[in-house]
Length: 185
Image (tube, rainbow, N blue to C red; front, side, top):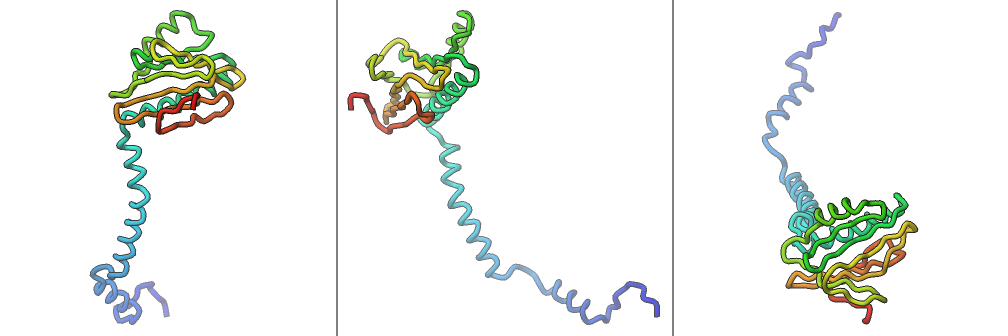
């Protein structure tokens, strides 16, 4: 007998599959409960992250910029074997960087293209353990080719809260204080 490969309509297995397919009109309640529970668990972990990254206030934005800039300058000083300087102008609340190989014209261009702090965030002062506090004018923090930097505290204020950023000579991370911190404390 030669088989044509077709399944006969009166085949009991095939008719059961057809009946099952047409009888299933939705998902069982338990499947829906499991899916909703899994979505709830995923949202529990993702919403706080989205909130913290999408809805940053001006102080958080300035904080992240300062920490990233310090890290990048430390790495650039080592990689390029040049001394870098982070310039902080307390009067205009602007920050920019230069390096020792820049011409005076390029240094002036860097000052003109300085990063301005957002919103009502202002630089209160920059404090050095030996040089004291600089409350007006310009403060310079140096990053050396050996990877270390001047020890300094940068103080920010937005009217609602104060932040202090501690730049340690030999530590790569900037330590952030959610208050006004001083070397005198």
